[in-house]
Length: 299
Ligand code: HMG
Ligand code: MG
Image (tube, rainbow, N blue to C red; front, side):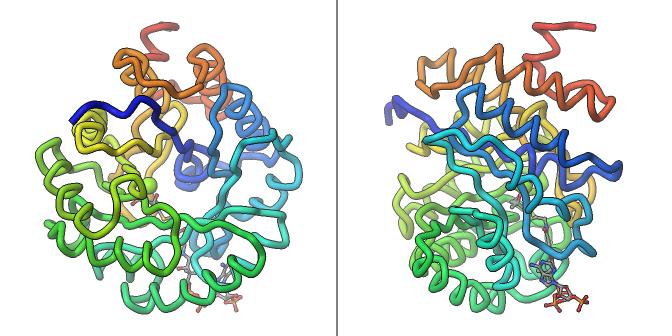
């Protein structure tokens, strides 16, 4: 199969990247990050989450971040919403796209959102209805598609069942998450082969954490499967608070370098992207997790 000519990067750094940070990060610093990312040409930025602040304290200021970002035309500013309370808060904050998140493993579902997979899917139904009524689009996530921190192996057929449910209830796209980054290129291809028998490939996205250093290989494997949307995180920030040891998503800068080398169009400016990464890393007082940014600006 030939490579897709254009790929969309969904920048999840402000949400998936920062949700795991223990140190307080000000609203102003989050706003600066989101604005720097839109200036780099990203047209999808996941800004925050409307989840319980007891579960994920870092996302508590998401409404304030939404109130202060410079909304650039053509850019989607998304947020996670696990239940109706989250959806209503997102709506009040002027959010036009939310993401609901389920898991392919029961144990992870319990630890992450305190309910079973089927209960989570039931909770999403009223969100879908309300979203439709308010003209809000909904993206879906499935976690643990290539392994679970509590259950180990996860069958691609189980991923397909959950992805199909999300798609058939109205998610316009379903992002398949290798939450703990244990997946390999071979497992990635098999998983997309199985899932795409139930959800069209152009409605699927890949979300790879880089814990085992396999994310870029897995993205290339996904491209060969005809997948053209990938989630990535500026400077490789992040991890999931309910998946111990999970590192950040693959760094956006590194995915862009891969895609530029393949001649795949993204509309993203590398230098501005690196700058956005440098700014947030200086806020966090931490070196970048992007190999490309490190190589371009050593020391
Ligand atoms: P729960 O405790 O079962 O909820 O949490 P509840 O309905 O029993 O309510 C308990 C309390 O939470 C109540 O407050 C509610 O008002 C409040 P109290 O009466 O005790 O003061 N509450 C809320 N507050 C704010 N916003 C809300 C909300 N809902 C209830 N939306 C819940 C269930 C889903 C809320 C909780 O488990 C939760 O917030 N989990 C968040 C998990 C999370 O954000 N995980 C990280 C994101 S997922 C991820 O990273 C994976 C991904 O990147 C893909 C991949 O890598 O695989 C997407
Ligand atoms: Mg994630």
